[in-house]
Length: 331
Image 1 (cartoon, rainbow, N blue to C red):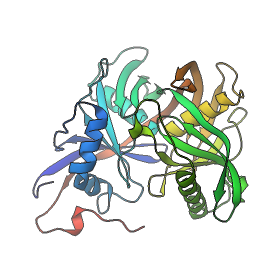
Image 2: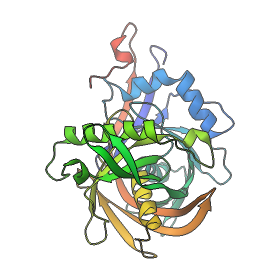
Image 3: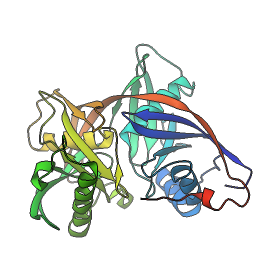
Image 4: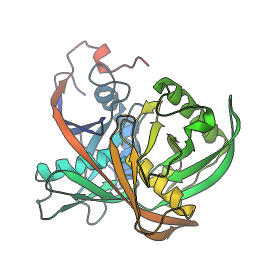
């Protein structure tokens, strides 16, 4: 960002998780595909991610969206996602916010009873259904179980069984009780420390792959659950992703992965809806729409529902000589 220039944003949250949508002032991002654009942003424009996500304009757990030109037929818009570590491949809470914002801004003409917004994400095309009152349901990219009950050696806990699911990004998933933790009473720092150890262990011990593109084959984070399935009551979970970032929402791509894992276990009746709750008390719904195949994986398309809210707008600048203002984090 040049000194004296400005970047404008719309500020939203989904279940308490921030969504900073860039609306003006960001340079054009070239690339024939969205993954090429993601690589360009990472390699050439990362100083702007630090400026918008890090302090003093953001914070350790800030999350942002950069609209870019789509390259898929039928996409109304495309987006890159950014966080404290870099650029993710999918973000459900941000899709929920972007869907509402795109309709409210007039990027897609409003329709009754719902407006369909086709959003190209780095993982593929996601279809959002935006209701007049602002509720959003989105249809995921194909999701699948990569591994069930995979034994992982985890520091301080020995060998622990975890599931690995893909919902636009890969997650390790396990009940918090396996680590002696409780999502209702445990300290957030303890949950973060535990989830981080799980993520690091899985990254070391499990080579991941994705049939569509090697850029998708990385473990984004770990989801600790209350052990429930979300049928009778919402299943509480916490997702710790990127560099120890804590999702305040139930995690849209995480809900997608959890539905795929339930489907793989044969524990999800056709058409059944599940509910998932975050540490803030926000609830997302999830249900399997259709079975399909992705490479060697039996997969499922998942519908996730939630709601985003506006919190304001911003115009960010950088004064000459303000080196601290280029971005820093105190973790």
